[in-house]
Image (cartoon, rainbow, N blue to C red; front, side, top):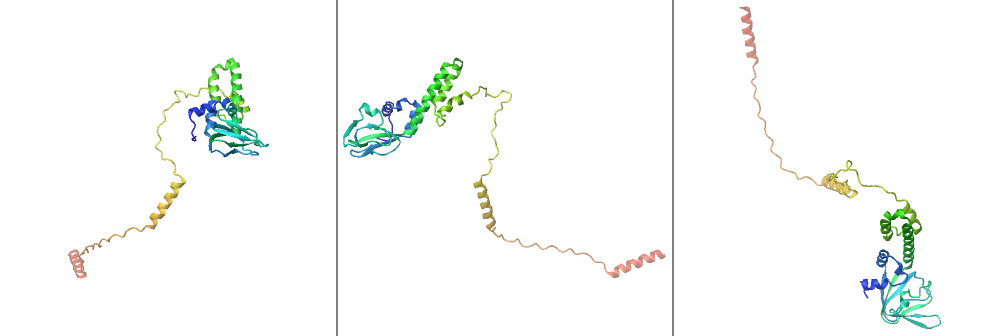
Amino acid sequence: MSDTITAADKNLLQSFVPINTLSLDHLDSLLRDRSIEVLCAGQNVFEAGECDNQHIYLLHGDVELLHADGTAERLSAESHLCTFPIAHVQPRQHSARAVTDCSVIRFDSAKIDGMIAWDQTANYIMLAIAAQRDLDEDAEWMATLLRSNLFYKVPPINIEQILHRFEQGDLRPDESDFHRPRASRRRPPHTRADRSAQREHSVHSDNVKKPVGKKKPATRKKSVVRKKTTTSAKAKSKNKKGERQAA
């Protein structure tokens, strides 16, 4: 048998005790953690004295239980005795060995016990809700909540206290306060990886030398020729001014 669960195998599992008392949601959750093992004739399923904390069911084939006095008891998958776990006493009082090629499925015993306790508490709460006529409107959503695995890890004794703390309210926003959200164009903040990448890029860019280009030839400035007046010319102009003033 493969490690997949078919619809026929699921129907078979619903006939196993005490798994048949679980809700469908809990059964599906239990099947996700199951372990299917295929054994050849002569292999041991478990040995006396082991404490494996598992529910082991026979799916196909035959096994035999070996008692301490040396006698053996044969079990077949078609027998009604195999609707119960195989010799489910911890630690194991018998050894189990495959007589033919067979397959077994193993479940965690603690998980099964927890799910059974949770389902029993949920059924009790549903009966208490049905007895209170003022809770008729709340019965449907409470039943949906209890059938789900939302509170599975919560101790069953606390479930009723949690349900009593629910308050009724209208969570819909007022039309005056309702605004259509606009897409934000702001960039997300830089992460630590982004900042380190930027630092590495800046260090790398500083170490890289810029290519040296050809220098342009310097342009020669034209010299400005200024006319200089000689001292003799200045003296002649002063003498002419003096003669004019004397006349």
